[in-house]
Every structure is written in structure tokens, then in C-alpha cells.
Length: 158
Image (tube, rainbow, N blue to C red):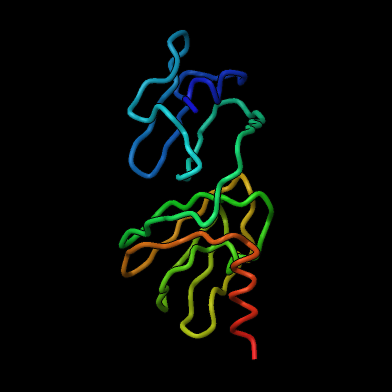
């Protein structure tokens, strides 16, 4: 959806901004949003800076799983493609994480420990929020359905 249509019902102010990992758009009173970022998708995480508080409600077709993702060397902004809150280990896409890899929410974080998984103050992922992850070696990853990820956990149990 276009940035203009998503934010059309909100009281916007000069300088309000929307960012993805690479680009942004800024709102100018009387003109609308201007910048390289023109559309928002379920494939990315976004940060939004608004002068006025507001509530944004979106509707659309749920994400189809499995969903491919690419994790960059260093930081990658991850969307939360699931519609329910879930444990961090269930949310994180399937990937060969290494000790020291990180994931951060707005105010919490977790670190990956080889053979044990994710540990830290960030323990759940919530719909409508995005997360930043840092991996030492990038590559392809996959968001599996929540049911599939639970089955993978069960397969590892003795």
C-alpha cells in the first residue's frame, strides 16, 4: 500500500517520517509524503516518527508461509509476519545462527548461544512490531508457519 493511503486518516505534521532499513519518506504539510519510500509491504520492518500520537489500523491478506527472508552480514530489520504473539525462538526465521548473533526490539534484546538458543530480556515477538537482528554471516532464511516451527522444536526434544 502507498504511504499516503496508509497514513491518510491520521493527523500528520511537518517532519513526520517513515523509514525502512535503506530509505525514508517525510511528510510536508499541504503536500504529503516525499522521499524514496513510497509503499509499505509485509516484507520489511518500518520505524515511524510522528509529532502527534495516533492509532494505525491496517487490514489485508495474511502473509503466506513459508516466507523467505535475507539476513545481511551485520544488521537486518525483520518484520513480524505472524498475527499472534509468540516466543522469540518460534518467531525467528530458520537460519544457521552462530553464538553472539543478536536480536533487538525497541527496548529489549536477546543473544544467541550455540546449542541453547536465544537468551535475554526479549523473549516474545509481538504483531505490529519489528525487530533488528545482527548475524555474523548473512544468508537466506525462512519464516515457517508457527505450527511448523513448533513441530521442529518437538522433533528436537528427547
